[in-house]
Length: 399
Ligand SMILES: *Cc1c(COP(=O)(O)O)cnc(C)c1O
Image 1 (cartoon, rainbow, N blue to C red):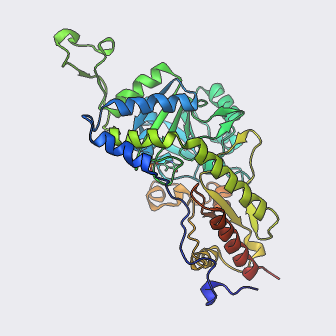
Image 2: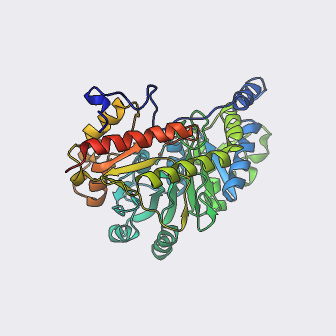
Image 3: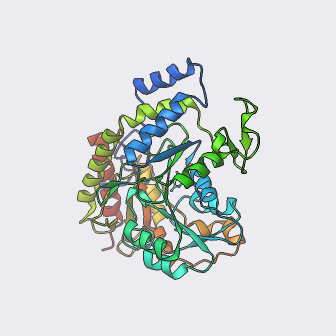
């Protein structure tokens, strides 16, 4: 057996790799520089162009581009009319922003449990959490796998709820052949550097709904409109005139970020193909590896994987997750954990959420670990990751 690096053995690789990383080429750099040399750094043509191209890509009528994925979620909650007394159902196995956005609006996040095999929100659990106060569902395509859209849509129709999709992980994923971003009432994206395409920071909301679109536009620019048909006051005062007709925020993206994203969007299909290829290789390597459980996929989801999560079968291993994680780091494969259940955080505990609320999410959390997945990984990087996982498993296998 190979001696683990953490015990003084030779690491699988000399250069550390991380769980996620952007891919920037010279043409991306040029796109940004061109915009920096143009008249518009913000509120210019690149933002509008990216909105159009993104909407086209996902097959939605509209896209509103914003400064980050969190702003996209916040604007969606504003457009959905979330306010004090309203409940919004979401998953605990997500980045905190998926729930925080409800609290920004004065509403209450309610956590439904996950399916222990797919790790996505379980429609039956959603049903069990619905009350008279429920107003919307924020479903997260965790790791990039599409949630059970049809089942959730059915619930939304039955109870008259707004369906918000946190698609931060799932750009380029398809559900029953349709792109994520065209399915829910509103879908939100993030363009943080670890996400599938990046603007440094950035976000977007896509929708097919005219009314929601208008509200999203207002929400991301102070509630201010230049559109005469929406004004109540004195529209003929002059072309300089605008009105604030609701309370919004400044969630605008700059034009140089939009130009980076336009350039990245051209590579999205290539990025997605490579992500899929690596995920397939991992699946194949780990599916029969005792001690590792792989995420199950629903057949409806054609997944562009954002993160690859292995789940340690801790009954079959002599180590803790912490020991496994540290052993991987010593092999120079830096993993990450996505995510601590949101309501475990002190902020949520202080708000009265109880431990044990979502037993499946808590159980899955104990064993999960995200291993490196990004398109720039070479085949030999991928084999190193597989080598490291296998090596650590072998060393900690229960006899
Ligand atoms: C990244 C992410 C966000 C937030 O996006 P930012 O652009 O970082 O604000 C929201 N939800 C999920 C699931 C994410 O992964």
